[in-house]
Image (cartoon, rainbow, N blue to C red; front, side, top):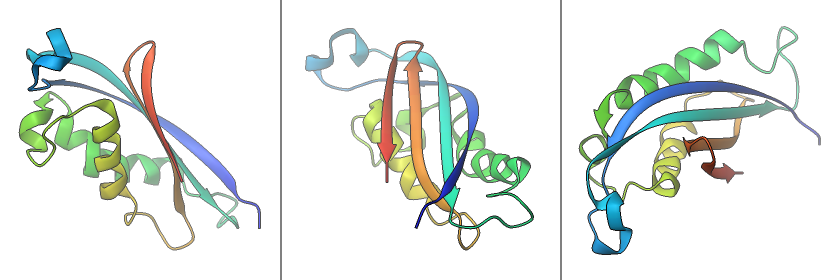
Length: 123
C-alpha cells in the first residue's frame, strides 16, 4: 500500500568531538549549525493530514531539539563514543520512532552537519 509523507526542517547548534586521533582536527571540541529534516508518513489521512505540522514540531522539539540545542553532544549522549552524524542520526531514530500517533511512521531523517555534508536514515 502506498503512503503519503511530509517533512519538517529543524535547526540547532551543538558541539561535539571525536575522541580518536584518526579523526584529525575533529578530535577537538568544535560546533556545527545542524539542520535536521524529519519525514513521517501514513497510509491514510486523518483530518486531511498525515499529522499536523505543529504536532510534528512539538514532538521533535520536545524529544530532540530541546535536548541538543546549545549542548555538547558527547555529554547529551555519553553512550555514543563517537558522535558522528551517522551515530547521532541513529540515536534520533531510536528516540523518535515510538513518539508518533498510531498510523504515523518515521520514514526518513536527514541530518546536515555542514551545508554540504549530511547523513541520512531511511526506513
